[in-house]
Length: 388
Ligand SMILES: *Cc1c(COP(=O)(O)O)cnc(C)c1O
Image 1: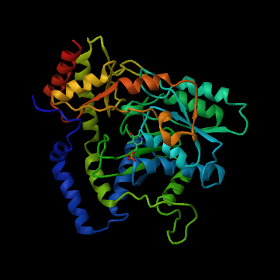
Image 2: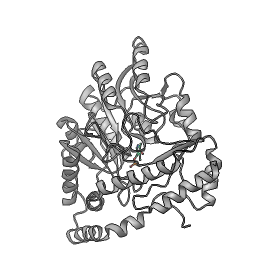
Image 3: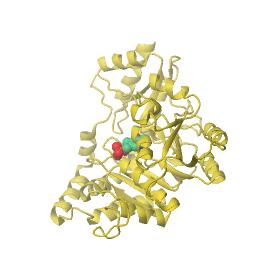
């Protein structure tokens, strides 16, 4: 059998070559590398697609998170950064940048366990933490940062309800979920801000690092637009501690070309996922992505950035598949609360045993949108051979 890679970006390029090549050619002709016309075109297209007032291109998903939080600190406190006593609740089972952005904005991350069925933040424990920390002196929870992990939306109506009750902001980490929706609303349009990544391997991936902040709030949008270019409306006379975090024209041009395929590609990811599920359903020793919580499998909500299974013999299974020419990945091998960077700078609520168990058992399978059905079947067959 042919090797099965996690992704095949060359194949995707060949599939969209005409649009991408002509987009790049247009840039070569106009030479407007900073804030070129493709930036606004791409921002407008994404804003319309997601149903948001503002979509603001930035240089990475990480910067999208940091800038969103910095804008909220300025808007809510009139201060450049949050205080250490300002707490932001998030999941421990995510990419480093989620927690790191909280530190960079000056606040303290509070890591909370996941729901073992969806790998997303456990909303009951968010409530429990807020209740238990009410009388804890000077610290106060200011926001919640849910991550739509693997392309599956977190339970946004519960999260919004808690946020409303306690006057907290919600920043969505949408890095893995471009195009996913929660009850008819695209994720990234629900919280005070959404932070997207266009890292090459994401569902909408560019030719390098890029990201986007989305928001319905004019104030946040204005601040993010200042922060991304050194902190001022006028970059030669600035108001805030800013960054050079612009989205490059060239990246916007490529992303705009690829954006035309996003619904088709997310649909193809869902098809690959269905084939995996059909092929693996009867295996007792592995757990498949959950199909009925919080919404039914096959709905238009999950965009399967990853198709992640669980096995108690994960490392052996991964090595076995490698021997069969099949690439897999472990997202993520360490929970954030075990990382040195957060030591002494975080709070951990209760035990995080679901996250600690997940890091030992999860394995993400190849989910290239253009993957042939026979490759998907081959992966499923090999897993059956191993666990059979
Ligand atoms: C990729 C990712 C990020 C960071 O995005 P970059 O563009 O790589 O900076 C943040 N959060 C999550 C959950 C991610 O998967």
